[in-house]
Image (spheres, rainbow, N blue to C red):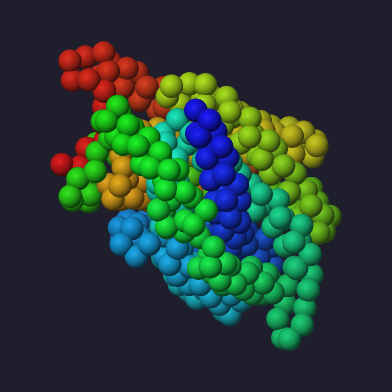
Length: 434
């Protein structure tokens, strides 16, 4: 047990802060458009419906290219593949500054999704190579803190950059150039300091690598985890589709809120900088939420109940934000929504990784994430259409609240089905790929 405590701490300190930085850059890049839209609409004619469609196209491309990306990654190695992803998405983000209208905006958003595809599930798979199952909820919970941290950094930065002009570029263009350039530069330390697995890391001893291998093998035996010769068969498994369906409402909520939050806040803010600063507030609560819920969920053998409770809390926060008139009350409700929404990932991903390992895990996680992330298309697009037709964000937020309530109900239904299957002669459900 001593080696487990010391080694887990060493791995966490060496790996998690670095992948958090990378994921923060990813979220900053994909979310910059939410702030750019504050001025793009008048500069290049991208209205609310066009913005919602373009924001969602990112996730359509993500859906199409994520599984192939994660299939390639174990063959190339995470270090090189992550560096490639950073360079490609950084360059495309910078090119967003050259968008001239809705069509070029759509094309660049689609290309950005294709470039970034595989990064998030790639890191989730990467963590399964370092941590035994019992330590993954906390590790994943710390890692996904990068998402709200990105918005916490992005909100005031974007508010300031929107006021910058020079070299023939206006504020929203500088925003894309700066965040894209940072992603490209991060490819350098990725190549220099990231290691593909414990066996290739010089700071892991042979004894420690043996311990990790032994613990991962125990998980395979005790949990019936599967890694077959044809990992693509995991795409057809009903349980992979189940987890994808459960992940879908969270992405509808997260991206529907994050891409439109600046617009919601702008209704009671008096400047771009003020909008940026106030938009950062819910993400402070999101960080707190991830920290608390990942530790709470770790007390459960499986995370069904925490996941359902978090879905419900997010629905309440978003729903009530439309019913209160006070800006302070609105911000409090949105903070509750962010507290819950960004806690979902750390709690959710401990469920599907109970059952898959190796190349099957890489493809299975990517499949769940890519199918689930279609919600990232649905959320921004539907909210955009609603805003365009009603002239207010309130009805759009109510739509998100209903979807999240369905997520809570679906989680409880899945738990009930799994409990019945576990009690029956067939034994526990497993994600199979044979």
